[in-house]
Image 1: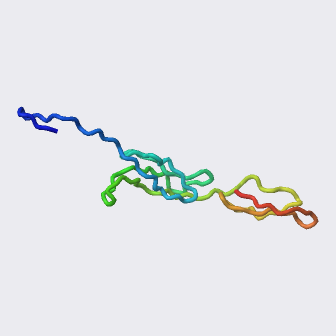
Image 2 (image 1 turned 120 degrees about the horizontal axis):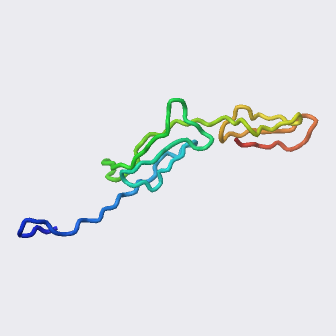
Image 3 (image 1 turned 180 degrees about the vertical axis):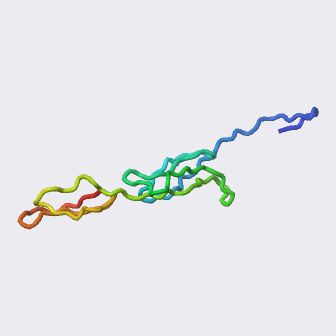
Length: 128
């Protein structure tokens, strides 16, 4: 800028664009977010992934791309919600010739189905 003899500034202001926050939401099982490429000042949401649910009394969390004076850069700021794995309720092996240890498993868990005495076949690992 230049100050003219009349006391007015002249010149072209800088072209400013918002910085992009790095997505540093913790990669914890059961957590999902839409926090990629969030611009300074903009929000994103951190919630539970498919197969998980919010624990009682919690909700999806709104994060924001803010200025972090400690690091002198932009950073996402917010809290991670509390999510718990859902229990598997469907797709259990059935039939008198089978046994399994699948009761009570949750999302991401595994169990084994096998043939009972008098039947043959390789045990199979199942995933919820």
